[in-house]
Structures are given as structure tokens and as C-alpha cells.
Length: 362
Image: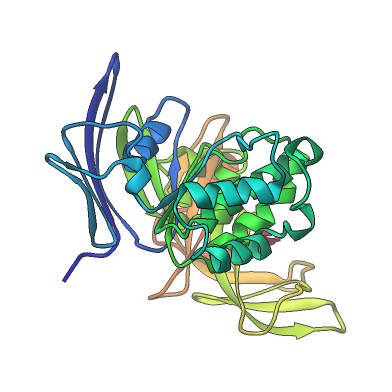
């Protein structure tokens, strides 16, 4: 039986840069290739696309071999969509014309009509189809470019920092559409970024690259809670949590969420009961208490256990917490070293986490 997922092995020396990776990635969902500039993210993406080539390479995508030894499927024969930092639309064509040209180049002009209609609906661009690129905002141009990539019915979607060229307003404009892709597409998406916020909102799996090699990979929740990584040491360190909508309290405008190991109450969400949502809890919004607090304005107080502690600069500590016993939700708390010593905190200790704020990732 053909192996599903993406198996990619590449070794490449280019000047003073060397890339060597051996990856086994999911065959569905969004995998973020994350790291600083120069870590090899785009080089890896281009190798997967076949735009760069190395003799020492192997690539199989959901059971189909694209590269091994002398066998090499050229880019134009690989069923993939590629979204660059810049939309790169033809200025003399309308948005509709750009989409039609992309389908023609892929040989899908007739059979891909349904895919085109679905892409247009998914990206919300039906009202933009008769406009030329100069009549579109940066976010609108990028949405057209993504629709063009989807209209060819790819088996793999590659996205190379699609928000990097946009200002904050345009990023906020396009992010909901990218989240819609995450929820809708049945194909794997490889998403290059150096933005922790984009990773937190969009990715299921993270591959962290450093100097051309894979430092680590894993789920978003696991990597954001790794105390040895900069993600957990930053001022904006946070836990990324999957939750299910349990109920709504219209009287107090609250929504009750179920997480592994407990429940949270948050400001009323416009989501259906049973719907899966992704939430973010910043480490700075979690305080710790040895005894269960009594009367308090803080609604969310969860029994927790200290899994790990790490000292940071400026006499700060980050504490990794587990909520629940077997299936745990991971939380981070950022406190002062003075508080840590005063409470005599240590690994394995049971206490209470007071969650002051919960943010919905939308």
C-alpha cells in the first residue's frame, strides 16, 4: 500500500549555505515551515516544487513518487499550486483572466471549472473578477493569486510567506480566508513563515528550521509550550489550545468551552455548539495560587500541575503547566523569580492556574 503523507529528503550545498532535511509530514492540514531568514525555508519549498534540484533527493507526496535517483518529475508536471510573497498577476488581465490563464497553463481549462468556482467562493472574490490588478488592494491581489493556485486542483499547495508583502491592515483582511483554507482543504499545505502569529492561527504541524537543518517538529500546541524554544521564552509566549463549544449563556454573554482536562468560560462567541475552535492564552495572563482562590473576579481557575520551570532574563520565570491527568491541556505562566521563590514552586507541584484572558484565534 502506498504511504500517505509527504516524505522529503534533501541535501544541498549552495555556496556557504548547506541544507539537509529528512521529513515525514502529514498528508492533510497545514504544516508551517518556521524559522528566521536564512534558515532554509524557501529553499526547501523550492526543492519540493522542483524549482531547485539536487541529485541527492527523495520526494513522495501522498503515495506518488516525484523524485528519487534519476527519476525527477519536472515542476510543470507536478500537481501543485504555488503562492509567492508577491501575487505576480498579469497587469493587462482582469482577475478572471488571470485565473483562466492559470488553468490553461495547467491544462485544466475545461475540467477545472468546478474547482475554479469553489476557489472563487472560498476566497470571497466573486465581486473582484472584472477588476484589473491595479484596482485591487494587496490583500485582494493575494486572494486572487491563491484562488489561481487552487483552481488547478493541486494535490499539494505551497505558500511562501504570502503575507510578508502586506501591511498590518491587509494581513488582517486576508487571514480569515487563510483560516478558511485550513478548515476546508483536503490536501496538504506547506506554509513558509517567520511569524509566530501566523503559525498559531493557521498551522497544525510545525517544522522549525535553523541553518538548513530541522531543529524540531511537532504539533502547534506542543512546540509553543516547549520551554527550550524561543516561542515560549518571548514576551508574547502563549499556549495554543483546541476547544469545543459546549454552551452559550446569553444572560451574561458568555460561552463555555471544553478543553482537555477542564472547562473555560469566555466572552460570547458567534460559534455553534459542538464547533471546534482554537484559542490562545498568553503566559502573562496566567497567575498561580497554591490554594484554590475564594471570591474572585477571575472566572477561569483550573487545577494544574507544574511540568517544568525555566528562568529567563530580568528575573523572570516561565512555568509549564498541565491541566487534567491523562489528556492534558498545556498552559504557560510568566511570573517573577521572586514570586517563584516566595511560593516555593517546583516540578510536580499541584496548584491552581488563574486565567485572566482568553483570545479566540480569528
